[in-house]
Structures are given as structure tokens and as C-alpha cells.
Length: 201
Length: 201
DNA sequence: CATGTTCTTGACACCATGTCAAATACTCTG
DNA sequence: CAGAGTATTTGACATGGTGTCAAGAACATG
Image (cartoon, rainbow over all chains, first blue to last red; front, side, top):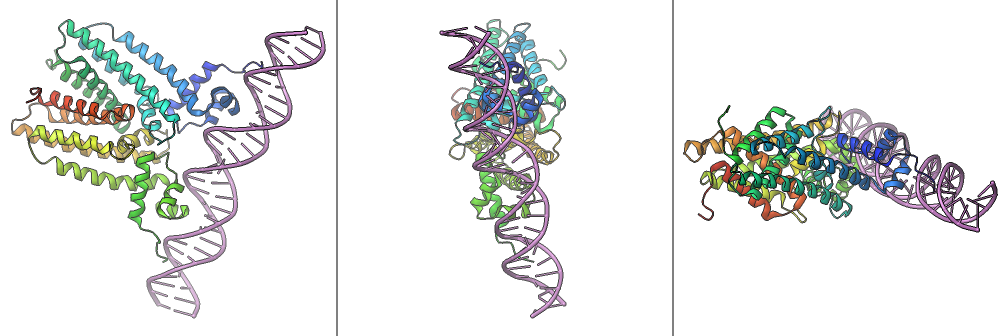
């Protein structure tokens, strides 16, 4: 075997960075090849197609993202945990200059759309899987909070609601880019789910 | 002047139908030209570019959509109005076979992204404008409801929250396509904003 | 009927994805 | 250590996308 001349993981990192910044459709294989110092043909040989490359790069990101969420969701009061959860979410898609948005939401609306393509179905599943995992994390957090008397309600319904709000935040971020407003919406959502606390308590 | 050989509005209708079904990036000018029975060059002559064509087509849609919302938001109790609002929202992006999703959200995540393009900025504004108009409608509805004692809270914050949830629904629709689940989330959101009512009352 | 203005049409430049065959560089076997 | 085998690299190619342009065509107007 002839040995590969580039680092598989390095290319995935570089590729995802471009996908995140410019969108999947907005990033060309030539862009990635140039940035990675690899021939375009080598990318096709190693990954098969642009979508397959994106999927691999995205899975890496999803792993890291879920791990970070899980780590952050484990400390403090329930209110604190939800605050940190939204904090992480907003920080994530306000990162970069200019802000890159939420890769899951952007990818979902960009790729989960073409009719009857087939390949997009794999992408849709990857995005849906991340959302399910996040919902499960939030639900567990709420259930634990309920046992400690910090929350009374349906953890499943509330978790779904919270994740829905995060997706809405991802959309509003693209529309207005108004970070303080996003934080206000997040705080309001926490109040709705946990019950309002005094304005400055 | 040589007269135009096609109907300007007819082309906008045809174009938006394709954009909605297949996405902006997924629809080619050739597709539209074929469907409309027009030469591709004529489209460029009449509309300038694909993005400009999309924008004109989208503005038409936005006008109609806001009008329909406004009509539907004017009758019944506050709870009824919000229910109809979510109903219309969900119905809108579950229309078509397969369901086409929310054109605003899809467009926003697809076009409001490319860095430093400039043309996308016009699209972003169009999407943001629709969201602002919808938010204002919901806010007015809530304010009117507050005067009748059907709602106590901050209409602006609540309206923003509701619109955020609709954007989240648009994203979840792409991820799961589970319409009953979307309706549950909507109902839950109404309960959170207005205060819970009996499970079957 | 001539002229001018607009629309239409087809050719072109450029860039995208994806495929392929030939060249290449290493590993492994004999 | 030589030779065979195999995976990677490389550049050319096919196809299809956007956008431009010059030339032809159709109508309004003097």
C-alpha cells in the first residue's frame, strides 16, 4: 500500500471549519483541498463525496458538542444548569468572526431538503440524532431536578420545549444577530419552565 | 419596445414553488426556465440574478402569508387565537408532498450565511422583516388579550418567545417530520404562556 | 416605412462535483 | 533484496450550474 500523505483527522477539522463558516453548499472541495494542502482527487478517494466528508466531519463535532454539554449540565441547581445549557448553546453559534451560527440547524435546513436525493437522508439522521441526544440530556437534568423538588411538570414535554427554543434561537441568530436579545429569550424560557423568579433575586 | 413574452407574476409563482420544494441552492435557473417555458437568458434579463428572482418571489409569498395570519388572528379568545396561529404555522410548512418546510427558516439558514457576499444581506433582511412583522402581530394580539384579562405578562417578551418556538418547530419539522409532536409542542407553549388549563377542559 | 428600444436567443467564460486511467510509492512475499 | 501487489496521487475529462454578451427579433413611434 502506498501510504496516505495527509492526516485524516486534520482534514476533517479543516473541512468542518469551512463548512461551519461558509455552509455546506458554499464550501467547495477545492476550498478544502487548498486549505488542507491536498489534491481534490485525494479527498474524493479518501471520503467518497462532499456529503460523506461533511458527515464525517459533522459526527466529530457532534461527539465533542454532546460531551461538552454533558460536562456542563452536571453541576449546580436546576436553574443554574439550564442557564449554563443556554449559555453554551448561544456561545456555540455566536463563536467565530463573523458568528458562524448553529451548524446543526444550518445543516438541517440546507441538506434535509432536496427531494428524493437519498444521500441527504443520512445527513438528516445525523442532525436528528444530535437533537435527540440533547433532548435526552435536558430531560434527565429536569427529571433529576424534579426529584430534588426544583421542578414540577413533565420532564419530557419541558425538555422538548427547551430544545425547540434553542432551535428557534439558532434561527433568530441568523435573522438578527442580536446576542443580548437571544439571552433575554433564553432567560424568559427558563422562567416559563421553572416558574418565574424575582427580577433580580 | 419589444413586448415581454411571458407573464411576470406567473414566473414568480412558478419560481417560488420550485424554491420552496427544492430549496434555493437546489433549484437551477434552467429548472425554472423549463417549467415556465421561458429561455434562461430571459430570466436573467427580467430579474437580474437568481437571488433577485428569489427575493421577488419571496416577497410575494411573505405578503400573502402575513395577510393570512392577520386575518386568522382576529377572532375568538386569546387562547383560540394563539391556537389558530400555531395551527396556521404548522399547516404552512407541512403543506405539499413531501412537506416543504418553512420557506423563511430554510431560506434564512441557506442564504443568510455566506460571508461577505452582500447580496445575501438583502435576503436576510427580507426574512428578518417577515419575522418582525409576525412578532408584532402576535404582540398586538397578546396586548389586546391582556386588556381583556386573558393574559398577564409582558406581551413583547411573550411574543418573542412564541415566534422563537415557531422557528424551532420549523427546524424540528425538518429533523423529525413528526406532525403530532409539533402540535404537542405548540400546545405546551401556549400553556406555558397563558397558564395551564385542565388537561381536557 | 424607418428608427429606436426592449426582449430573446445561443455562445461563451468560469467554477462546481464527480469519474477515470495512468503514474507513483510504499508493503509484503518469495 | 527484488519483484509483485495495492492503495494513493494526479491531471484530464464529462456534466451541469451561474452569469455575460453580442447579435437577431418584435414591437412602438415618428
